[in-house]
Amino acid sequence: SSLPSPPPPAAAAASKQWVQVKVPFEDTVYDIDFDSPTHGYIVGARGSFAETNDGGQTWEPRSFSNLDAEEEITYRFQVVSFKDGEGWVLGKPTLMLHTKDGGKSWERIPLSPKLPGEPTAILATGPNSAEMITSSGAVYVTENAGRNWRAQVKETIDATLNRISSSGVSGASYFTGNIVNEQRDNKGAYIAISSRGNFFLTWEPGQDFWIPHNRGTPRRIQNMGFVRGDIKNGLWMTLNGGKLLVASDNVDLSAEEFPFSEANIKTGGYGITDVAWRNDNEVWAVGGSGTMYVSYDNGKNFAFDKSANNIPGNLYNVKFFPEYDNNGWALGSNGVLLKFVGEKA
Image (cartoon, rainbow, N blue to C red; front, side, top):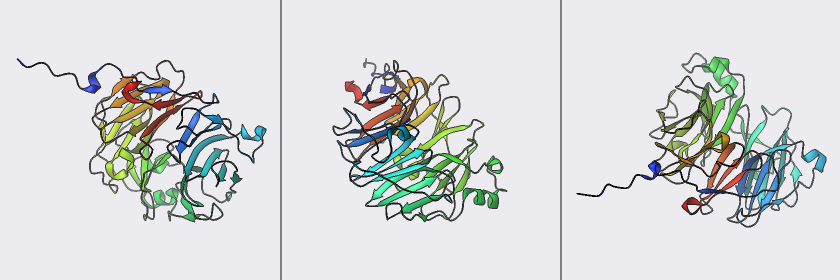
């Protein structure tokens, strides 16, 4: 008789594929970016800012040369983006900083009070160039280091919803004018969630306005993002109560509803805050109370990973850098930074 085959990886005992890396602050780590395999930055709450030159093994505290220490801790730095030594940082209350020399010196970029919404994300795209999105869904590009910004979307989300509010998107008539959790894919398409979590919107370069979509479930949307970094590969959506839905086949961006199917993930009700594809089949999800999960079948079934079991706090963000040996990072509260090491942990 033939031997029973070994269990698939998802059925194996809980894995432990991440290790904690020490950072020089104890506040929430909000974002991480690298502009080479060795050189990167993290930013966080209360003015936290650190740099690595060894691929993230060690992190040195840095400060922004043009902010004094007392001013610095009043800011929550939420976004950092670097490309070829040129970098951008976004803070709250609204603050935009730009460096051309790898972070040695910074200039504060003044933003017009007429700007619709607050800047919520920025991406370094080249010399003196960046793309920014605001909490009202306005997308802007600059090619002169932020002195001028060119709008990419013709119509505010408010105006779009007023114009098409009779359509079948439930919740659109209650729109407060703000979106949250804006995400950009590798080719410049965006997804965003209405601040009440009752519907979501997509925008692609060249479109004049955002397209609203039904969430297709009574539960509120917590977060959304892309399958393998490209809207064409599909979307994932997390809901209140620890549910995760994935739509990975033939997503029609003009449709009101997407073909989401629920992933088999046992969260015990802990919310999932972020999801990232490491390759075509391997998917990681992170969430409240240091929960981590891995799927080896493109997000259909997930198993628990116990790397953060003994680490207090929540994980908010998981990110892989395919351009730099697929380095992986998970970010959280209390200065938590985890590095992906795979089965060798």
